[in-house]
Image 1 (tube, each protein chain N blue to C red):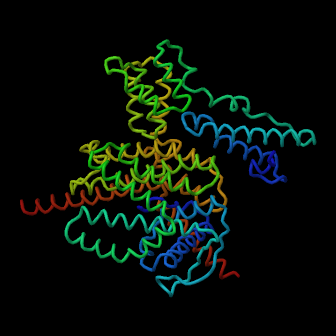
Image 2: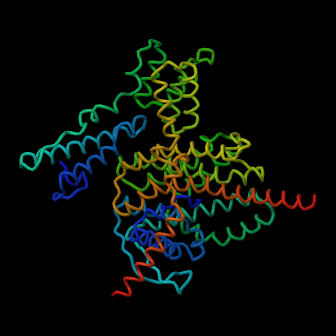
Image 3: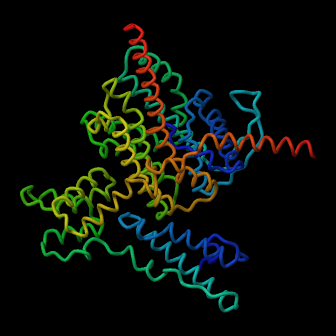
Length: 213
Length: 304
């Protein structure tokens, strides 16, 4: 087993608060929600497990040493998520689509795409567009995937699965988590006046310090 | 490459900034030594980042030395050097990409540009041969990528298919940076979205120029009267790519330069989006408005 302190990126002399902070940051970094549709979901959940174990180990050791108590921060909810896959959430009965869902779960995207393309366009319902979206998403063809998900949602607006996927992608596109969100620009951007003031202030204090010293 | 991958300097610590500069200068020096003085001209921020990734992923030992700038001997400079071949790798990518880019220019440009490209290509030939000899795989991948790029452009492809060749190339290059199977898997995904981001960023940045020259651009179908609306769309496409890129990056086991690389991923990308898609365009728009105002005023003069 790795050194739990090294896993969390802290020194053994770190305070409980520091450890908690480091743990929270790592938990956010490897959070299953972030990797929900990623091909690397398994690696992220492994990391998450490692981080959880390290945190629990440190906290247990410290508790037994009598230093403090801890609350296991959502470890149960983190370890279970991220393994949902595409078949579990759907209870429909079309055997063709459930077969394709199985292929997608097994990572056979090329086959799944072939199978989907083989379905005549007259029979293509909302689920066809959704599954095609999933295949394209995993292929890295994000714009096509986005359009397929959009169509699926339009055809079947009540479906929770399609809706939640589409909402997730819209969130990604808005740039609130990663990337750039033009709507919050006003808060983030550096105000030129402040910079000037800051620099002039630094210059003044520099002059003062020099004259004093 | 295009120079979009750079850190947001205001978010760097001073020592990190110094280190970044020393890597940049170190790469310049190493390229001159390994592939010939002229290749220093191809130095870019993207390749600097690639060098940092190579060194960091391979856990190469790197150190910083004092010296003088090779271009301007009056300037004192710090150079980073590494014991492995991280710099050689990044330099080779730069040289090979430039060489094939020149071939591309020769095949589809006007007479004057073609002549200049031919001349440069001749000057670069020896450097290219050296780089090709050191890293034959890169040369093969780049050549294949450009072929597929040409095809995608001829087919008037959409954003996904047009960006795929660049994405696949970067995926290939990044994969070659590690021996570990798990790291390779992460790097493959990371490289794919990194390449996709670079390509889309470049396409969005060049959109107006391409419209003027009537050359291929994957965003052409999405253009609307209001340029800011088109840019918002480009920004959305980029955001979605970053949303795949950052999670892959977070899983990488990096050794050195972690703070700088973090900076590029968490601040640099979004800053470039802001700068290239919104600020630059805005300033141009302001200038146009001024021009309009000027035209209006001079018209008024005539009227009176």
